[in-house]
Length: 253
Image (cartoon, rainbow, N blue to C red; front, top):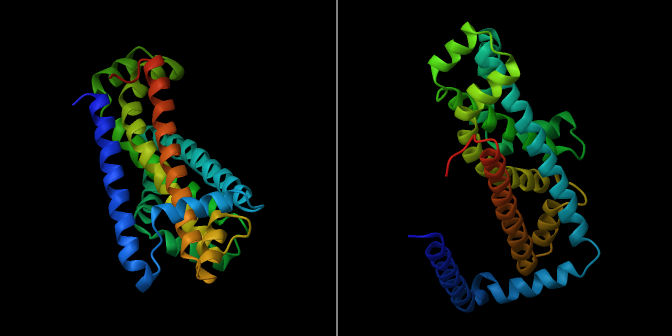
């Protein structure tokens, strides 16, 4: 199926699920107060016209994006260093294993106990992205041709040239695939951290407040906004990395 066909299929399937959602809200609203897509859209419009919604979204966006970017850079740098220096990999292995397996709620609870201030979302996104991209770079290093690495060692190719022509062609495609998923995961963990920590001036605080006020329409409106922002950020990250990769011939297709 070509790209146009996939796009049409996505639109049709999305529309179908929206219809199911609307029908479910009609039958269940009197029982559990389930709002439908129409009510959710109305609530988004109302919230967007208020003084807090846009500010909450932008503050959360800034924390999550900055945590993702910094965590990705640090994770990739540490992974590449660990591939060259064995002791670094041995030191970092337990930490990365803990970050990989530890639930986000547990990390947030630890940050709360330590008094993380308003930086919960940033920190959880930093740790999430660092662990994901560290593992991604390590996986990508396995795809690097060992003969090319050996040749680079024999001819003493400078590190910048080695990185560009030997390491990145193997590592970059793996990172490009993982980065989008990591961005989406950062949104989930970041907003969850804001909810748990009741971070003032954030999407998480808006969600917690809407739930406390028993306003399901607002809860679904904030949830829809987070879903849309997460999807857009994920697609933008993938698109940017594809463009960079093709420009530098690090990716094919």
